[in-house]
Image (cartoon, rainbow, N blue to C red; front, side, top):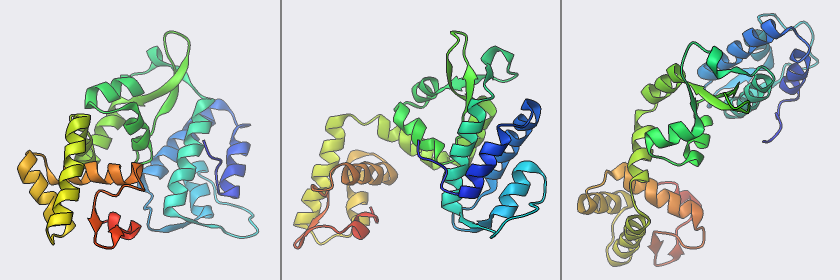
Length: 237
């Protein structure tokens, strides 16, 4: 796990480790609520972040740091993980069902890697002590439900993609390359044609090709007379 990029937020984390446990739990809740309202395209003064987590106004700071929203989301994810790791409670003591990474992956029909990727999209876990005595990441069921409600397309697309066999994924990539070479079609037209032929949604086709492009930088699914598409073009897929 990378370190918190914001020096001020990293310092705050260090300071909170010395506060009483009850207060730290309250601050952990506040950090999770803050995470939920951050817009990745905006900038936030550290003074605002400090107040939302601690409930106090910042008394002194040499320079009121501005943090980009996308960077703040990543920093808060790490902040929550590290602060929560010291506050792990037994699963049996919780009022709600706690889901493990493997359980969620099985329920949604996706890989555990997909669940970890969803953490960056807002599915925030905490550390819990499971009946075998081991500390693991766990997800409160109500928060899982809220994530599904807020990201229906993401969840549905991942489930559809997971149901594709490796052979089916390869066929989709081959069809894309064949259509690109034979016809003067836009990416959207190619995706729609493959969707119509396979019976899969356009989002699933786009997701499959995008994954292929990311995993095979030297073997672009779409080719033009001038060679492999540029990264900016691949982003359109």
